[in-house]
Each structure stands twice: as structure tokens, then as C-alpha cells.
Amino acid sequence: MREATKMKRTSCMDSFRYMLAVAVALFVLAALPVSAAQTLTCAVTPDYIPITFSYHGAQLSITGQSAPTDDLIVSIISKSTDTALKYQEKVGGLVWMKKGTLEFKDAPGVYLLHSTADLNRILAADERNQHLLGYEALRGHILIEDSKGNPATGNWFDEYLKFKKNEKVYDIQEGTVLRQHGVEGNTYQAKVAWPYQAPPGVYTVEVLAVRDGKVVDRASSNFEVKSVGITAALSKMAFEQAGLYGIMAVVIALLAGFAVGAIFKKGGGSH
Image (tube, rainbow, N blue to C red; front, side, top):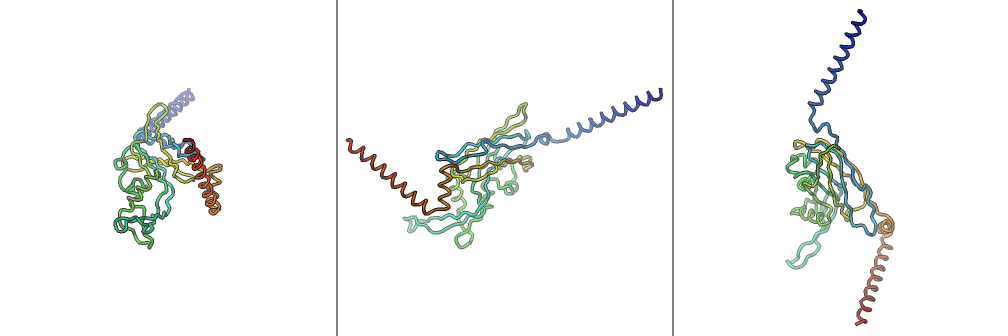
């Protein structure tokens, strides 16, 4: 009888401990913010882009899961390098002439941003500068010098930005990251037009989760852009055998000119 009573007490104590542990676990989970239960993920499709003769850029699909209340920033920012560009000025108010060279230091070659909302609204200024998000953050990051190494004066950053935008390698699209909440979780998607002007290489897509004006989480994924076939062979020749490549380019241009001339001559003789 005593053993039965003892076993009953032990069973009751075990049940009490179990219920207490469950209650504590539920309390901890309830105390966590909803977004903490979500893990930020990132995937890019395609993850390999071949450059062929018919290549004219690509369409990237960037998808993943995120917390339902966080804003998202999707970025493709290549490694910063120093870029030298020649500039022209009007001489005598009539003729444009090359006047010198400017060097843009620590300038990303590719700078593409997509977000769920306006960057200025979802992210504090110090965070934008720290993570190099937005053109104003770039303005403070890129150092512009003349050929003598002196800081260049004038609106050269705006001209550089215009040049990069025309090449399609700099672009900011706000409010273009789409969200979907369903039984499979909280997902997002961004469609990014990859410009053919961007050079071959391995690029990183980074997704930042923003909450209360701060970056709270990040995820990334890589994709590769690579020359293949005859395109790769010509690129290699251009770097390793520049003289031969130049001769071939002249010969091809001459042959093309002769072919066009023959076509027009034939067409003219038929009238």
C-alpha cells in the first residue's frame, strides 16, 4: 500500500514537472516577437548565366522566406574598385574637347537595389550609410579625384550616376519586392533585370531584413555570369593577344563593308 502511494506521488510530481516545463516554454515563445520565429532565406534563379552571341541580359528571380512584419531590401552590389573616366568640356563655347581624367575611388561596378518600400522611410540615415544603401550613401562613399590626386569639385558624382544609370548597371526600384502570406509561410519575390553591360563574374545577392529602422537579419546567395564558347575565346584573345584581335576586328569590318556594298550594288543594278 505504501509503495502504491509512493508511486502515485512520484507520477503526480512527474506530471506536474512536465506541465510546468510546457508552461514555461509557452511563456517564452509568447514573449518572443512574432518575427523572431521566422528565418530569413534567399535563393536566386538562375544561378548561372552563360554569355553567348545572343546574350542580351537576363531576368533574375530572387525568392525566400521572411518575417511577416519586416521590410526587405534586395541588393546586388559588386566589389568596389577605382574607375578612371575621361571628361570633356566646351572650348570657346563651341567645341567639345577632352580636358582630363577623373578617378572614382571605391565605386561599385554594379549597384542594383529593390525594396518593399521607400528606403528613406524604412531605414534610418545612419543605417543607410553604414550598409551603403541609396544614392546619397554612395555619394558619401565614392571619392572623386582629378589626375593630380586632388578632390574634384563640381557635380561629377551626378554625372557619374547618370552614366551608370544609362548603362543599366545602377538602378534602385523601391516597392518592388512582393510579399505573400499563406499556409507555406511568409514568402517574398523580387524580379531583377540583369543588364548585359555587367561584366562576367560571381555576384552576391544579399537580402536585408529591416525592423524599426534597423537591419536585423540578412541572407545571401550567389550566381555566376560567364562567357562560353566562341564568346569566351574572343574575350580571351582580346586580353592575351590584343594585336591579333585588332587585326581580326578590322578584317571582319572590311568584309562586312564589302558585303553591304555588293548588296546595294546588286540592288541598284536591278532598277
